Amino acid sequence: MAKSSKEEPFFDNNHAKESGMQAFGLYRALHKGDVFDDVPGDTKEEMIKKAVSLIAKSLHVDGEILTELLMDREKMMPTALNHGFAVPHTRDFLLPGPFDRVIVVYPKKPIEYGALDQEKVHTLFFLLACEDKSHLRLLAKLAHLASGHGNRLFLEKKPEKKALLAYIKDWESGVCQPALNA
Image 1: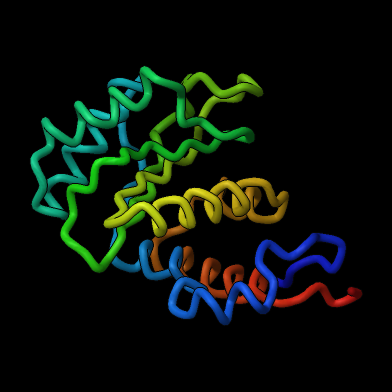
Image 2: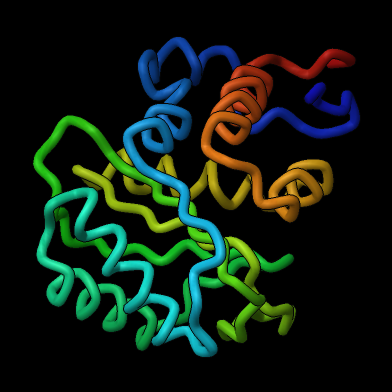
């Protein structure tokens, strides 16, 4: 999808050159992650537990520990963004490097998550990073992704992994380019 020339670029060319491999960090994290659709759950807690049971199997991590860490983070402050998105994450690094993971979870029905705009969450990006810098970069990219109207419309369709990866690759290549009218 083409980026609107009215939107400000998220990163400038200097940042893209400096970050090197980070230019497609979200794409790689999604590629290493997974997409789960129609996950049941009526509450934030139920959704996290159900999603973690799926995530723990695919990543070979202890689901109880991951659930506890995610719930502790949610108690500090909800990880909901506006517009129906949430980014459950923990600052504890459970995965050995060098690959971060983003696992997309689409609830069977939108759930209350404590968002400031009070919208129910329809898309969750579970973020499991290997280090602080990549954790912060991925959080920033996910927040930026969720802020774009076209991105939100695309994600509300609950795309499968292949379509999501193609979209993210195109989107990420656009956010690292200078503004067309600058």
